[in-house]
Each structure stands twice: as structure tokens, then as C-alpha cells.
Amino acid sequence: MNRGQLLYEGKAKSVYLSDTPDELIVAFRDDITAFDGQKKDSLAGKGGYNARISAFFFTYLEEKGIPTHFMGMIDDHTMAVKRLNMIPLEVIVRNRAAGSIVRRYPFREGQTFDTPLIVMDYKDDSRHDPMINDDIIIALGLLSRDEIQHVRDLALAVNRHLKELFRARGLDLVDFKIEFGRFGDTILLGDEISMDSMRLWDVKTGASLDKDVYRYDKGDVLSAYAKVVDMMIPKEFGGVQ
Ligand SMILES: Nc1ncnc2c1ncn2[C@@H]1O[C@H](COP(=O)(O)OP(=O)(O)O)[C@@H](O)[C@H]1O
Ligand SMILES: [Mg+2]
Image (cartoon, rainbow, N blue to C red; front, top):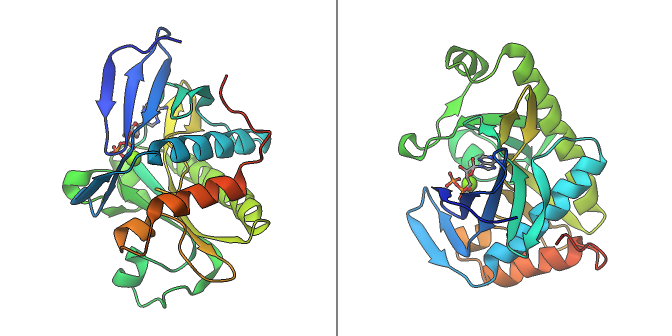
């Protein structure tokens, strides 16, 4: 598959056209950012870790019946995906309280939610991704009420499957963010599922193995990402076409 014109350059990935109109090429760059892009660095190898783990999770979730945009790896930091009409929502699933929810509401850091919480933010950096609710989503014409329910169901299913997978490797999935998009009449899971978009705690030590290591200068973020890739991806998972 040939890489065409650059369509969009985001904070961590570059999206290119391909030779097929309904397929795109997503290159995971080594850039890492936090706090709405205020903190920025480039860490050699980071893009590859996130691309490989995303490919692995998309493949695993497809096996579990969750439709995703993932088509295959082109090289170890680039994937081919179906071109989606992205829904500008960050769908966040929280199993424990951490990060912004602790700053905004009187939850205790690390407290477990009996039922996972779904929080949706309107994806717009210039507005600092404000939290949104069902009525606003409908008024903005982003999703119908039934589609909101469908997206919630998909997000909870993703959570169940990922949580189980991590738990078996001694990792606790605290929270994660996913994005969806439309492909014709269907809503597919898009974007990425990586250490940039989740919180993962080591069950035994409580250590963070995700972007919090970078956000809060908790140590070497590249070794944290490498460790997750090593723990999660079986040797026989190739990914590259
Ligand atoms: N399958 C897809 N089709 C079209 N756009 C996508 C697809 N998957 C992800 N995207 C979009 O491509 C961009 C990926 O780059 P990223 O660096 O994550 O950007 P951002 O800074 O906007 O989060 C995101 O805006 C994401 O919504
Ligand atoms: Mg992004």
C-alpha cells in the first residue's frame, strides 16, 4: 500500500491518504505530549511501542466481536486502517479514580468504581476537551440516543476484554480513552489503544506503566512502554503484513 498525501498531523500520529479512497495510513510518531500539548518531547522508539500494542489490541478485540478500523501493519510504527468519519468524542472508561476525575470531584485517588464509569469529552484541544452529556451530543448532531447507547455498550465491552487481558499479566487497567468513527452505516472503534491513552498500574507495586510516567516525571517512560509491550504481546504475534 502506497503512502499518499498527508491528511492530518495530530499530536502523536500522522494520517496519510493511501491508494484506496476508503483506507488511510496512520504513522505513530515518537512525539509525546501532555497537558494539552504544553509538555512535549520526542522519544525514539515510542511510536513503535504504541503502534504495536494498538495493533495487538485491535486484533484481539476484533476476535472478541468488536468492529475496529484496523486492517494491518505496514511496518512497526505504521498501520493501515479504514477511513472513518471521526466522531469528535473522547470516550473514557474508568475502573478506578485517577487523574482529572479526582481533581474535579471528591473521589479518592485509586478508589474502585463498583460499576465502570463512562465519561465523554468533546474532542477539541482549543476548548480543552470539555466534558459533554447526552443532550449536548444529540443537540450537536454527533450521535442519536440509540447510537450513544451503542457506543457505551462497545466501550464497556472493550473494557471487559482489555481488563481481563491485563489482569492475567498482573496489570490493572485503571482507565482508558477510545475514539469512534463512522464507516458507512457502522460505528467502528478507531484511533489507537496504547499506553498514551490509558492508565495501567502494576498490581503488585502500584507503579504506573503509562503516560503518567511522562506527565508526572515518575521515571523512564520508554522502559515502562517497553515493559507493557513485552508483557502483553505474545512472541508469535507478528502484526506486520
Ligand atoms: N480510521 C480513522 N480515520 C480517520 N481519522 C482517524 C482514524 N483513526 C484516528 N483518526 C484521527 O486521526 C488523528 C490521529 O492523530 P493524533 O496524533 O492522535 O491526533 P490528535 O492530536 O487529534 O489526538 C486523530 O485526530 C484521530 O481522531
Ligand atoms: Mg490522539
